[in-house]
Each structure stands twice: as C-alpha cells, then as structure tokens.
Image 1 (tube, rainbow, N blue to C red):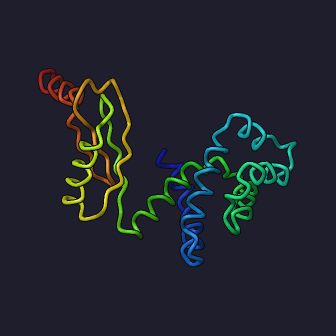
Image 2: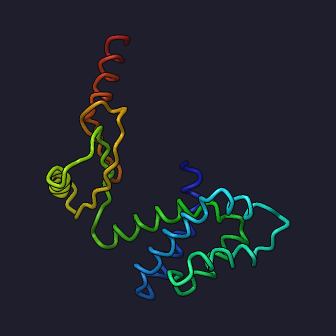
Length: 178
C-alpha cells in the first residue's frame, strides 16, 4: 500500500497544485472521487489493462461516466494517467488529494471504527476532543467493524488511538504469552 501511495503522490501533488492555482479544489475533489470509483470497477479495470484497447477509447469511457463532474483539464489528467499506465492509482491519488486539501484548509479527516453505529452526539464529542488535541477542525468518517466487539479505534494523520475491546484483548494476550 505504501508503494502505491508513493507512486500516486506526484500525480496527486500536481493535481492539487493545479486545482489550487485555478481555485478549483472542489471541482477536482469531486472529479477525482468519481474517477476513483470508475477506476475501481472490474470491467473498467479489465479494459484499461487491455493493450488492444486504445487509450483514447478508455479516456472517452471516463469522460462519458464523469461527464459534467469533469474538472477543467481533468480529461487531460486522466489521459496522462492512462498513457503512463497509472490509472489504477486513482484511489490513492484521490485519498492524497483529499489529505492535501484538508491540510490546506486546516482540517483533518479522522476515521472512527466502532462495533456499532455512532450517534450524532458521540460523533460530535469525538470530533471536539480530537480538535482540542490536534488543533484543527476534524471531519469524522465513521465506519462499523463488528470484529472490534466494543470500544473505538480512531485514526487521524499519524495518530492511532485503540480503545477497542479487541485491542485490549490482544494486548492482554501478548502480555500473558510474552
């Protein structure tokens, strides 16, 4: 995963720089988000990796699906990815772009894993606590993972807080087993 992010970083940085210069951060964020979903489709992936299919046809496929959500120069960006055989990195490019945008806007995205769906009050309390700790606005992305059994795991930037029952049991097991 780290290698894919390393490969995606120059593309994400270039897209972010262009979007920032043209004051089109939202348009590029929307386009990259949709393009990443398109690139993840198994049929699109098969076509994109088929050497018998012309790159122009694949670019047209992206353009037809993304359509009005295509940022200015977004089509050229997709073509560049296709020419360099990097269209499969769109998910990582999208994630990095979102991180760059959040950073520029003084925000951070926090992934919150819980065994059960969070209430709005719980989500708000976590966001406020993280805001005090990180000194930035926090966007909560809540996900349910029943394997946690209970508690919460929070990931924001390099910060990981594991307050899950599963994490506690794993820690206890490693202490007992040495």
